[in-house]
Image (tube, rainbow, N blue to C red; front, side, top):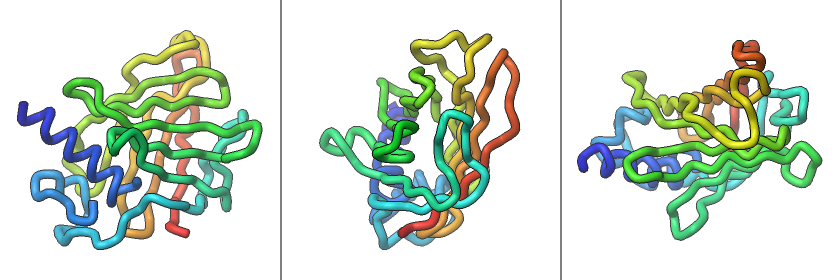
Length: 178
């Protein structure tokens, strides 16, 4: 029960202040870099810088990532490359006692990543937990994604795509609030 409550608070934190709470609950503070509450919400637009680009069209330097809360606060949606043929969405949501990230990819697959608690302050790490419409031993798919909160206006996203059961070079994007 405590784990479920913790993960639900983490989802609310993600939605309101850590990419997506006006105040971070004390037991979720390990997910933040600083101990003081954030005063700004991060839903809105973020500009991407870095090397997070896939062959199928994803977050390129200067592109906008939209962050929205949906379904009465039960999901947080990141939209990448909106309005382009390579548009993709990552949806953060609870499934019982698990916080999941489902990535709806331009490759027309949907890998599911599970939140894994990190001891590193400000880090939210997601690891592969299955998915639909692909064979993970062969097909390219998002396999890991980590969000590192730098400050209230900056988040670093690192992702690893697997293909043929092997990791490709890590992709890195630094997201800045617009």
